Image (cartoon, rainbow, N blue to C red; front, side):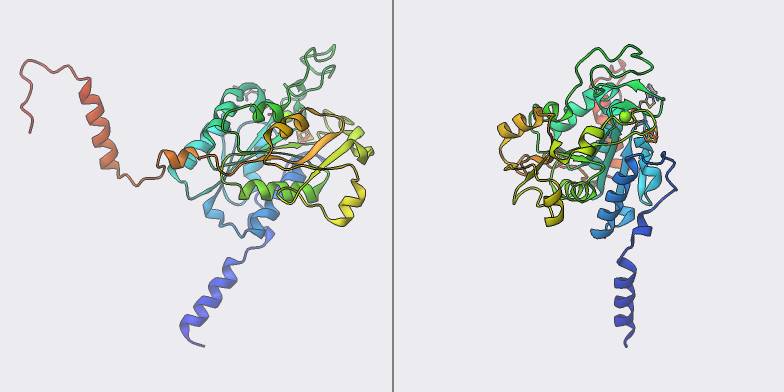
Length: 326
Ligand SMILES: Cc1ncc(C[n+]2csc(CCOP(=O)(O)OP(=O)(O)O)c2C)c(N)n1
Ligand code: SF4
Ligand SMILES: [Mg+2]
């Protein structure tokens, strides 16, 4: 065998990655925490897509769910509370060639980070966002979040949450330029994987809400859906999720939904009993901000400095003896 052929074979061998190639630190989440299922789905996706770890970034805010980047053997940025999206947008703007994922919680994204969320939808950058929605602030030990159902007893609402919960699906579907919205649950791994995969392949901002169990602070909160498969409305379509025969037999409450129909998506998103699971909306034709703005143009530090100097010069008050322009 020639040297070149050996080299090619070695490269092929090296470039086929296994699950372990994406497994970072040992997760510190509680036993039974739905975040574990989300991590598994994402690691499987990375392996199946053979993503290059050095070309993949996970960006998060603060919360139990936001510990996600530590558990991936890729690049990562464990950011500050509510700011996962602008950080991820900065990464994508500077390096559009990277695969950028965002992991955020219902508190992180829907409370302190809500303004960034709205604008991220409108900017439609090519990012995959996973909203780990356990209906509670987990890391800080049980405060009500915007998605806590009315009546939820917590440290901040000892007599029960006063307000109707915010619906992240209808919010997202209401914003200009929305291009991908899906809902998964941590306890149906097949659909969770298919949705994460569809979101990854979507060109634009893909918003995935994953209903995530928190046995520590919300025990039993999702039992209605877990105990009765009829309470789940599985959205199926040739352009959406196509469940396996076995899953189809288990989840018989199904609806053929064309994800290009935004009005129908909004109607379905409003329903909570049964809970819709699948792809609600997809429109790959919405332009991405980084393309409109020509992100990633190669600029040397000298070019950046010269551009800044020129901007500052516009506002300079020159002394009487202004030096003659060179
Ligand atoms: C500016 C700021 N305010 C408040 C906090 C405290 N804090 C940390 S995580 C968190 C809520 C996390 O909830 P969520 O995003 O739902 O994540 P989970 O732990 O449930 O995964 C809060 C309020 C903080 N770290 N920084
Ligand atoms: S507190 Fe809840 S969200 Fe946090 S790790 Fe434990 S089970 Fe998961
Ligand atoms: Mg939470």
